Length: 137
Image (tube, rainbow, N blue to C red; front, side, top):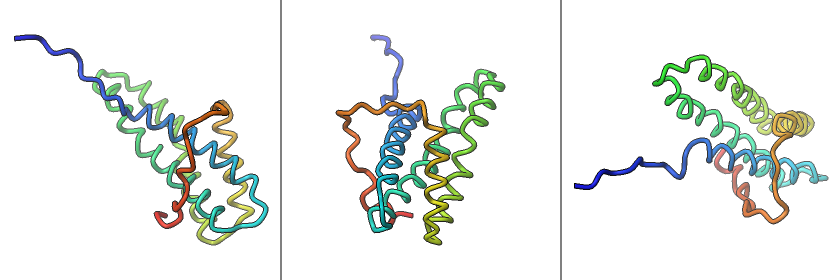
């Protein structure tokens, strides 16, 4: 009988988080070019909200392995580093539902500051994942 190697999950929460951050940055860039609020603006803002919520949900999955090994400080520091995603998503969701576009722009700018180190290549495969996101809000 042959020994099996380690099972590696190609869709880890870390990779998903990286993909989401790049998509959110692209959506923020698109949102900042909008001159008038329309359906695309709503979709972009909703996508940012949903993306931030998904990032927040992925944190516990990521720190689970560290906690099993007793790396409590590392796990807590990671949680603290990403805790802002929950507050930002709540504030932006509230502003979007009230159609307070100044607040939406402010929250998008704050989010962009948090992701200022995220680089997106010119030839990316991200596409436009925000289309129809407002319906899922």
